Image (cartoon, rainbow, N blue to C red):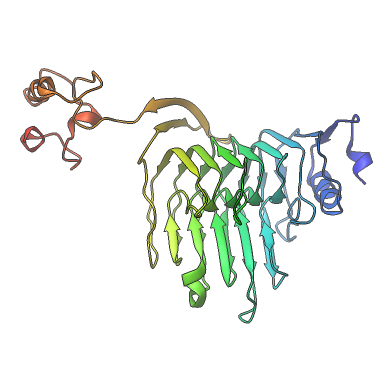
Length: 326
């Protein structure tokens, strides 16, 4: 089946729902595509009535390079019930250590895994990938992502990023965006569920991401970006908006690094346009330090002699007043 997809020995071009399905079946049958590039040549609209079979499994991960060229895959509906331990779901199920997925978006769908109440099992579910051990870059998710296992790791981009059992990993998620709903309805096991706007659980690198999830709820550990595993990890340039609800909220936002500036064009993937240094609150004159000169600069703003800037809101109440001078 895979030979019919190839235009050369090293490049596969996919331009239809049927070709994408055949590619998924080929990977799941054991062909990793390591050293090869798969190119999406058009937006793909899947059949809403068909369950999507994710690309790659834990036993047969995708290990090549998948270049979506800025295209969307629509109607990604995954409904898996009662599979074995280690279930993965998303557009991709499992991305291997040499795998790269870039410039593709998922929209208009629901990615869902459920298990029987007696099962003691893990699941990893994300809009782009259930489990990522490679690289995901410049990708976006607008689909709803649901994990209803005994222990669920649920994220807008990936359920898990890296080797969650420990050890070294090069797993990276960079320049990615989520606007999908993230939740679990299996509240009886809520003390074992990890939900994140970008990643459910992470021990890799998460760089310059944006999450605007409409809901992240019903989890023991919920965060707008990610829940970190005990293994040392890196989260830089993360920004989020939206409601966050759950039983225990874990993790902070914008605590280090820099933040992302994104632009959006109708019908296309979000684009990271620039990076800015983290705001130094109180540095009103923007000279890289907070000194008595900033008090003068703040007074000039209050007198209308200078324009406002984010650094001037010292007490972080969303307005610049005499209280900020104090």
